Length: 373
Image 1 (cartoon, rainbow, N blue to C red):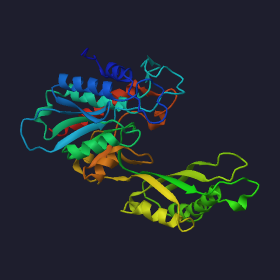
Image 2 (cartoon, rainbow, N blue to C red):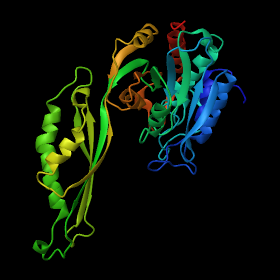
Image 3 (cartoon, one colour):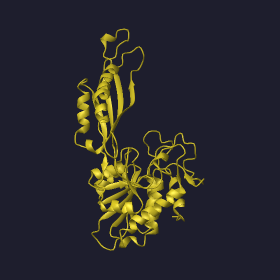
């Protein structure tokens, strides 16, 4: 490969490779992470690591690399950003130009999370000759699918051994050891369609959904609001979408609603979503429900590698958003998120990262690794 001369050139190369998640409207003809995974694999090999591109779904792989070590049996540390970005529809800049101006690098993924990825990779590049002698075996994993479904981190956790993972996210070098869970609840009520001139002959699915949402608002929402986490605050309930009916003069036979539930570690127990659904069914026994369930993150802040991250310049923090760290922690792998850049720039129409922050990220990761000697 044409080896970048510095971390800025490396980030430019990464941003110029579209790796848009296909969920929703990606805004590109060929979404997916394959090209980015191949680039990262080649960079890792140039740095002395073994690296494999591991398919997770068609055209959408992880990339996993391991650096050599001078002794077997060491604990294994992975750096792990995600390869995918959100879509580019509505962007006000060229999403893949990777232009540098005003002390910033602009483009889709510059902040979330190709900036943290470039800083991680460049720190590994600069320390490549010292890595084999470190007290931990060092690896790198680039995950597909973080922006929807977390299938990459789930596949990694099922296949690889890891004893600690630093997820690459734009945390302004904060050490996110706890964040809320993200659960999406999809509800459907069904009625019987008839002419609106005789509504009593039918069953109005929207009215049924209103009963369900009444329980959500009158019972579940206040219960969430009454709870609090010392770092994360209260869990939240948000009705995000509702859709029902086909025409004004037809009694609707179906209504659908989608609800976003952000949970705190105190709510992390088996069957939690099932309990909520059972409560909603008290007013509509035939309510159909499906959901995606992503648990909150909590990694013990007393972990020695969290201490090393603090000494490298990071500060303990929590976050209201969700990331791959929670998937790994749920699989028994201690994980945190830490990286340069600001989450405020993620997913924006003119996404950017400051070059100074990018360079501080390299120094941060290097200072962390050097403590493992």
